[in-house]
Amino acid sequence: MGESRTELIAWLNDLLQVNYTKVEQCGTGGAYCQIIDSIFGDVPMARVKMNAKHEYEFIGNFKILQNVFRAHKIEKPIPVEKLVKCKMQDNLEFVQWIKRFWDSNYGGQGYDPVARRKGASTDTPATIAPLAPAARSAGLGVGGGRAGGRTPIGGPRSTSTQPNEVVQQLRTQLAEMSQHLEGLEKERDFYFAKLRDIEILVQQQLEVVEAEGKEDPTLRDIQKILYSTEDGFEVPEPTVDEEETF
Image 1: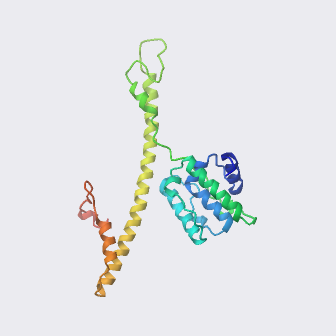
Image 2: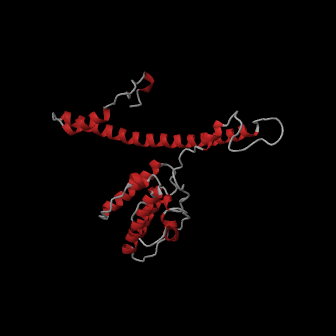
């Protein structure tokens, strides 16, 4: 607990040969996976995304970490929901714990982090950047007397400069929103694919059970959950062209 954030980052960068600047970057999960790999050497680093950019990729890294914890009977709970938000305090506490664990369990053996991750890029964001509100106040100044505290210098009261600034800010915000939406769509597809695999497996098992003249209430309950809907959300009826969707 005695190390500062600066000391922890320096230790992590030296151990993993990365260039992290904030503990928040550990929220992607890649660094945690490789720290544990430096101890046991059996983390499937080929599956770890050291340059993860989206939350669904962070979650994938933490699933790998959870599997390794189970394999080595490490009882420390991993607060995945908090860590993937890339908040400083949550990740600082986990980095402090994992440093103590490393101090107690690392055997001093040689470790080549770059070779273990096969030279994969470690360029990772510091946080999941929220949608910038930068254009909110500026947007209110369009067509008004002042925008951002600036007053036109000389000439008629033209807003030619101010709208350009506002347009640029709005373009930046739009680009950030598009990137955020792309991440959400990938995350949606990621979980939909998993649910689809579960649906197929349940259906196959039900067919086997029914062929034997038996009944499996648990499988039926799972199937009900998969097909259940809520008020305001209904699964659209498939068209002829969409027969292969489900």
